[in-house]
Length: 375
Ligand SMILES: *Cc1c(COP(=O)(O)O)cnc(C)c1O
Image 1: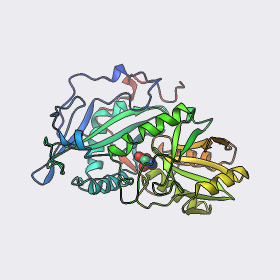
Image 2: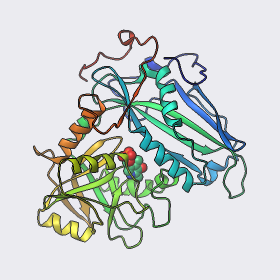
Image 3: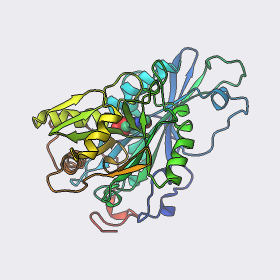
Image 4: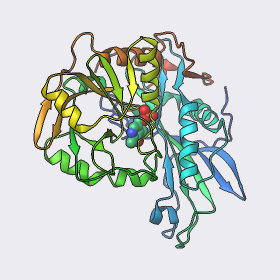
């Protein structure tokens, strides 16, 4: 299948520069990206171009005022060799919602699927072959106008780039450690917490840096009004299993509506697990941890899929949580989700979008290690 969009090929592939045994996350970008422009009131000029530097004027308003949105989703090479994206329709809807909040014209329905198809048609050799690894796709939209007035840009650029990424499974054994931050806030009611927009992440760097210095992996955010209720982790939504039910904070505009979160809720309902989207006060979580009633906690997000939480720090105290016990929900959810993503399990919910195989697909000639090879 040829690219559904006009294609300008990269003069030379960077595929051979990749260390497939040490992919990291977002360290390497594939040879091409999809580009679209918003001009004269419409999204247009969709094309595939070489990944590379952009010419941006220093007066570009997005650089000054942060009118940007992004997304993150994964494309998998299944154990059956087929290529599939996980729930790109959900990412597209969220991208559109982020756009509306940030005064960016939302790209029309189906543009992400078209972009994925075009990107995979040309950059399929970049999709890792090892079970667990995947091609992370990062759509980005930025205001393109150069002006210093504080107002929305009138032209925009959308880019869809991709990066082969490692499997998180190997590092997840001990569980992540989270620091409850009672000083800083990630978002506030009426703000932009539900949008994947740059400023949310820039604002989290300092609190995350402080947490790291104190020996934690990430911050567990509380609400921005009273610092009372648990919200989420920097790039993951949070779930707790206590008293044989599962709870996760509700979506009220201050947390990111994760696609993984939604998938986890669907799977838990399906299994008959009692699950509630309800506020979780930090005080009651502390009490539950002191009384040993927290059976497990885990984060849910595209990058790690499911990340068990091994430790939560609150007010100078550390509470260890059970990780990796047999029969844990987090292990089960991880296996189920990745099983669906890699085509090992039936996709009962229609979550996977199969991307047509590209013409001239030659797995044998790939510079990557053979399928199933171990690190
Ligand atoms: C992206 C993100 C998530 C997870 O969303 P997924 O769609 O599951 O990847 C959670 N919280 C924040 C702040 C995020 O940016």
